Image (cartoon, rainbow, N blue to C red; front, side, top):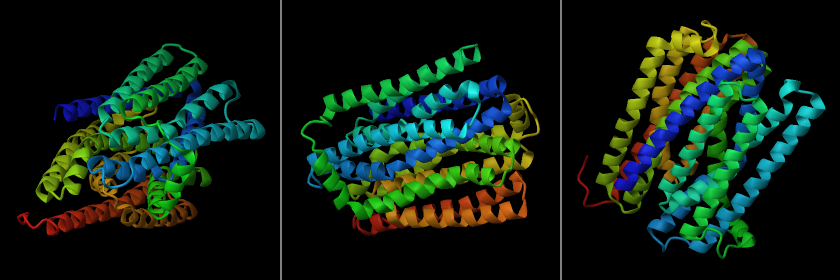
Length: 431
C-alpha cells in the first residue's frame, strides 16, 4: 500500500508538471514566434505523435504477458519475454532515429517551417519521438513491480523540463531549450535502462533472434494490439490532419490544439489513476477475486471523477479568461468548444478506466474492433464536415458525440469482463 500511495503521489506530480509545462510552452512560444509559426510547430508535434505509433501496440501486449508471468511464473518463459522486450527496444530506438532523419530531409527538401528556427524544430522533433523506446523500458519495469522507479525518473525529467521552459520564458534561446529537451530524454532513458538491468536483469542472457521469434509467434494478439493502439491514437490526433487537409486556417488549428491539450491533461490525469490501480486489478483478475476487482474498478472511477470535475468546472466557468490569457486572443476558443471539452473529459474518464483494465488482462481484440469502428465513423464524419465547410465548433461537437459512443462500448465490455469473472468464481456473491 505504501508503494502504491508513493506511486500515486509521483503520478500526480508528473501530471501536474506535464500540464503546467504544456501550457507554459504554448504561452511562451505564441509570444516568441507568433501564432502562425506556433501552428506549424503544433503540426510538427502531431507528426511526432504519429511516429510513436510505430510501437504497434507491442508494448501493451508485452506488458500483459510479462505481468502475467510475474504474478504466475508458470505462465510463459521469463527469458523469452525479456528477449522480446530488448528486441522491441532496439527496433524502436532505430525507428526514432530514422524518423528524425526523414523529418530533417523533408524540412530541407521542401523548405518548410520558419527558417530561423529550423535546427531547433528538428531537435524538438527528435526529443518528441524518444518516448518510443521509453515505452518498452517502462512497461518491462512496471510489469516487474518497478513502477515507482519508472515514475520517479519520469517525474524528475518533467521537473527539470519545467525549469528549462521557465528559462525559455525568461529569454533562453529556443535552440538551447531544444538541446536541453533532447538531453533530458536521453538521460532518462539511460537511467531507466541501467536500473532495469540492476533490478531484474533486463539485458542479461537475452537473444535478439529469440526475441524476434517470440514476437512473431504472438503475431495474432500483437495484431489486435497494433490495431487498437493505432486506431486509438488516430482518434485523438487525426483532427490536426483533417483541419490541415481542409485548409481550415491557423485559428481553427490553434482552437483544436487547445481542445487537444486540455483533454490530454484529462487523459494524463486518468492514466495516473488507472496505472496506479492496474497492478492490483490484474492481480485480482488472475487470482479470480471478483469482489476485489469490482471494488478496485469503483475506486478507479471515483478517483478519476475528481480531476474530471475540477477541470470541467474550470473550463465551464473561467474558460474565456483562461484561453484569452493563454493565447492573447479572447475569441479563438468559443463557448461551444469549451462545452465540448467538458463533455469530452467525462467520456475520456469512462473510456480510460474501462479500457485500461480490459487491455491489462488481454482483451485487446474486442477493444480493437470498437476503436477501429469509432475511427471509421470519425473519418467519414470528417470528410462530410470538410466537404460541407462546417466550422471548427460543429466539427468538434460531432467528434465528441462519436467518441462518446466508443467510450460507452468500452464500459459495456468492462461490465462483461466483470460478469465473466464473477461467474467463474463460485464463492463470489451476486453484486
